[in-house]
Length: 129
Image (cartoon, rainbow, N blue to C red):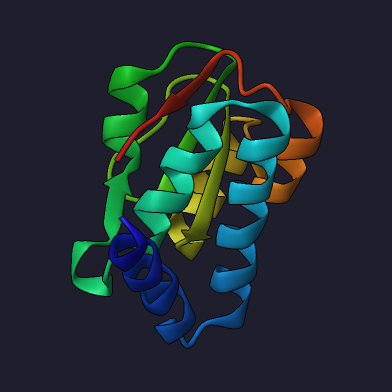
């Protein structure tokens, strides 16, 4: 068991993106504070190697969400497709085209930190990716 914990810590420390490393630590901390597994799951997805990074097009978000849903993408949102309804999306990165299309539908783009402050229990959130 101790070996697994050490290995996971080593992987986090190997990330060169300081913002990503801080976000992962904040998500894990919130998971412990609120005793909710959703934040730990998002942190685990973000810890994965870059070759396993989640990339989601707006088409997939439109297909699996409804009006006024809150969506988490543990990776990058791309602008492929269109949104037909208003959604709030938290992701690590957004392409410029995705930002434009989300704002065109009056959707909200927020960071993981903002989402953890607004909804610390993580209720009503869908993970897509």
